[in-house]
Amino acid sequence: MQTRRVETRVKAAATEGGRRTRDRILRAAAELMFKQGVAGTSIPDVQRRAQVSASQIYHYFGDKKGLTAAVIEYQSTVKLEQQRPLLDHLDSIDALREWCERAAVRLDAVHCAGGCEIGSLASELSDIDPSARLGLAAGFAAWQTAIESGLARMRERGDLGADEDVSALAVTLLAAIQGGMLLSQVSQDATPYRRAVNVVIDHIADRVAAAQTSRSADR
Amino acid sequence: MQTRRVETRVKAAATEGGRRTRDRILRAAAELMFKQGVAGTSIPDVQRRAQVSASQIYHYFGDKKGLTAAVIEYQSTVKLEQQRPLLDHLDSIDALREWCERAAVRLDAVHCAGGCEIGSLASELSDIDPSARLGLAAGFAAWQTAIESGLARMRERGDLGADEDVSALAVTLLAAIQGGMLLSQVSQDATPYRRAVNVVIDHIADRVAAAQTSRSADR
DNA sequence: CAAGGATTGGAATTGACTTTCCAATTTTGC
DNA sequence: GCAAAATTGGAAAGTCAATTCCAATCCTTG
Image (cartoon, rainbow over all chains, first blue to last red; front, side, top):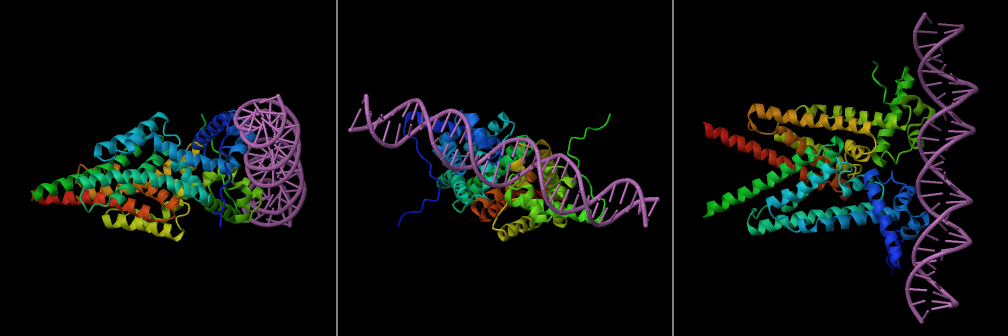
């Protein structure tokens, strides 16, 4: 039995020029969909932005749904890779703060427009496009994993108590990031994001301090 | 100097029948926009749902933007009023948990579809409709105020230390709610919401315990 | 260099949506 | 009960998006 091909065929580029075109389309679509939403981004919009004709978009992505799926994949992987160096070392309070602050600076730079690349797409598409939802879930999962494994390392190291639920802490930080970005987007001010994220990190720091105390009590 | 009339004129209904029609439209639009997004909800959709003709919608709301604005107002106020009894007594850890769990049960009931009524609209409209953004900011502010005043009461009462930043705690809880709902929407499982919210409330509970300790030390 | 696939441009089709308009019809205030 | 205002139905205009199609042109490979 063949695996069913549910997704719209997404043709890979065979020539160098094709690859560049495909990339240009993807980048343009990602940017527009981030800034204006998926529904607010038309194919002609993407055409203008990427300087391509309609046939090129349909050639490489099949249809708008295919293009959207590609954008989700793009945002999920590329954005994750960009942060890779930091993500791989989220195993201290300082590292967590640094990572979150990095995002805050980005928010400042764009006046909080757009919120989170994945979060915006998630809110718009989850309920109306099942396959998009799966892609977005995977994107979030990757992020959660990154946070969680950092915390797990802290636990192994003894910075956090052995009974600490690092998974719950990771989900909470991720939620605070997403919710904080949303609040900041609405108020056009990164303060809500900064406050929410820092309170959650404070909480993690408290857990670290607690582990410290109980360890010295054992001595 | 007259105040400039920026918003689309929204005509109030003058007759009983008109009031009912207007209400039917508003409810239908709110429900559809919640489930399918604003962009995903067409005027014909609302017509079918509310059993009205196009002219009735345009008569009462001017245009789609006016209808959207009315839906924002509706969700902000009506949803807030629904929760009023609970919102007015968010001045204990148990009350906070109860209130958040209430929302979790609703998520369970709808399999996490739609997320938060305000949050979804916020994510979709903040960047593309300035006046909608303001309305949504007001909606969030109302919620934050409700949480914050509960916490402030706890502080006055001595449950929380006098130096506690209840505003930051309120923002954090709100962010966890929003972010948690988003994560739950994407994963179609209320667990992320429950975990995020409860970790934040755990943190508040820790602050309460700390206040307790320092008070008994004073004795 | 010739064949065949890859890529591209641009027109054409189709359909849906927003909004306007006007002619009924109903309700209200007097 | 009557004039004025409110409400309603439904058609129609105008716009724009998604997608298809086909005829070029470009590139690769033998």
